[in-house]
Image (cartoon, rainbow, N blue to C red):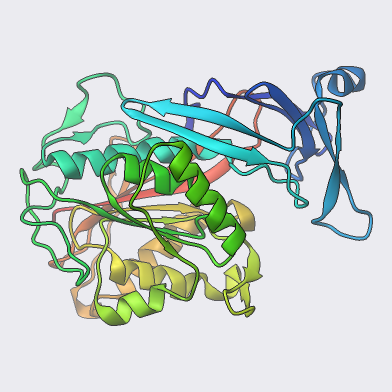
Length: 358
């Protein structure tokens, strides 16, 4: 199922897109920057774009990625925005980078809501929001026996926990390619034991600043190879968030290409997820992969960690979601493809996965 979401984000507004650019408001300031997916025509005239933009990104003709910002007088190089959802109140520092980014990807707000709701459900040990987007009406929830909720004590660093309905746990959430930490903040705000992993020290420092601005603490910061080590240790997580770049550099300068590593990466994540009461958020915007390919990659990765004779897959439609049934002691998966957007936005395809009791 494809579901278009528009989270309530007063400090962000997509004003216009087109001709490979986008015009956005972050708080009080308006930015103009490239957007390769905006293949249509603009709605507003060029003069209006120039009048509204406080900062415009000019691409370096020698580089596909880098450039510089042209600022209107009075435009600060750094400022903050706020995002609120239920009892979550986040503050994040924005800045104008040489790669056209400003420090957050606002379409990810739908994921922040999803992560917060899932973690709160595990902390409370009772109900799970019916709307996977986090936009459900008040009181909309599913009974604990319909959605897997861990039972027993929460996982320690050894990664083992008992699970079952009706018991409270401290969920463990792993945020990979975590950038400036919006998803980490959402998990932490919900009471999760949160681990934030990114190979770039500067953005980890930026994420730590966002944590402090939001009045939170306790996030674990990692700037090194981590996932395979966690697999070897046998550790488990109730939630994993993945927003990988198409390519990049590791902590030791090694080159990393998503299309060469995605299968191994997803198999490692499947081994790290708790067998019940867990969730996965996967964003493949950087590769431009379709929702079908994303769903297939996750399904194959989850199957790879189980012995082949135990596997059987079918795809009945239930409530618009794709349900993949695995005949084993490991949980079933329910996934939805979510397209997060604001008005005429460039859309981001995200895969939300929850595992349910068989």
